[in-house]
Image 1 (tube, rainbow, N blue to C red):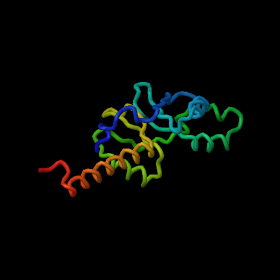
Image 2: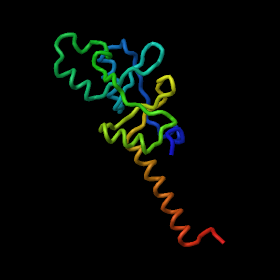
Image 3: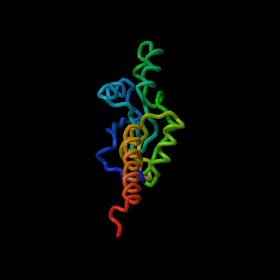
Length: 146
């Protein structure tokens, strides 16, 4: 199955922030049940991501106004993304290899469209396997065939 075939309703909550915003603003966004904030430039192109782990790392060394630094100084800029034409199985393997819980879904210009969670990817893949299994059982039993 391709990522573009996943219903948009199962895409995680997309939260974005400008690369010139303060880190404290990203921290506020992460408190609302969001695990990942996509950092975008002024044209809306994804340039990085910030996670709760990034915030905690920075907070542990904060002194004075250090927590008011630009989010771009703390973000992970070498981001792993997926696109609509990617196979979901490939996305799953990429996430597993990099130990990612979330992966941004982007268009051809790297503009964020959504966030896929490991739970969503696994759920869709398991659903596909269950359907295949049911079809194989029906085939073996001769159900629907004459």
